Length: 125
Image (cartoon, rainbow, N blue to C red; front, side):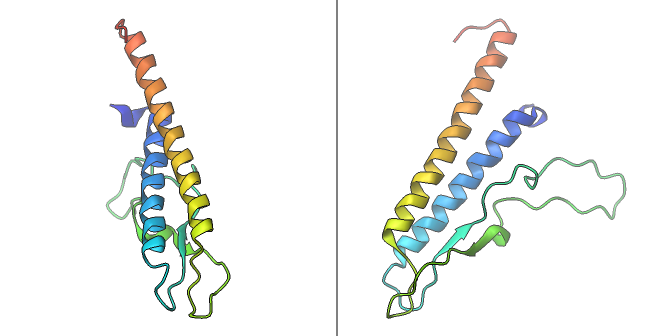
C-alpha cells in the first residue's frame, strides 16, 4: 500500500540508498591500510533515477534498476598514499555523516507520512 504513495516510496528508496552507501563506506574504512585499494562511493541519490513500479504492457519491457545494485558504485577519488591507497579516514567520516543525514531524512518523511495516514484513518498516535 505504501508503494502507491510516491512520497513514501521515495523516502524508502532514499533510506535504502543511504544504507547501501554506509556499507560502501564501511568497506572503505576496513581497507584503509590495504595497499592499492581505491576508495569507492555511491552516486548521489537522484529521485528521477529511483526505481518506479512501471506497468509493463509488453513482454519485452525492461524493469528499472535498483539502488541496491553495484551499478551506482564509483571511484571516490582522493589523493593516493605512497602504497597506492586512496582512503582518507576524514573523508569517510564526512561521507558517513552525510549518509546518516540522508537516512534520518528518509526516516522523518516516513514517520510524518504514517502519522498523516493514521490521522486520515481517525486514529491517534
